[in-house]
Length: 256
Image (cartoon, rainbow, N blue to C red; front, side, top):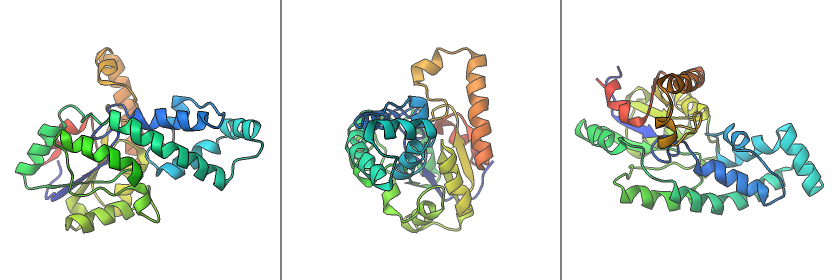
């Protein structure tokens, strides 16, 4: 159990919206395809949770993708190429993310529980500000409007560093870090909370690591679900998660 909590800072895709975290993956695939490079959804999922420019940097420097980029574009990947892909990625992701911004089942009931307890709600994200401009209104229309949203390009240094959490504590007026929970479905997002000295809660089944829709997950056997849960839990605990739950709907069970 976690006690004396005054604020919770949530991630977005895979945590509060977009069960399975599909919007970023489809957008990375489309952005690379625009430059003649085919990438898989699994390759796109690997660096999930990092700021989007850093995510592209990791992807394009994977040996297979780097070789494909050089073959298609005539040069080894450069910083300029990363910026070029990001410029193509952002408008694609802004449109796709808005279409994948349905709240995770049970999220609203969880938020009502936090409100009854007087706990403030903030957010950080690997999405850029341009992308979040299309996501925030969709979330608000469903009843989710966190008190802040720290985007990856708001900061000089993003995840897995602590600055997003520090900014959230300033925005929310809540301290010390022990009074602020960070909730995330990715290793960099959990590391962000750990670096800031906050208690951290990992999200297993709705997140990027499992990468399944609600319907796909429901179609699995209990043993298959448990295998996914165990794999995601191991990843999140290795990143430093203090607790791991299936989805944000389970968060109130951790609060004393």
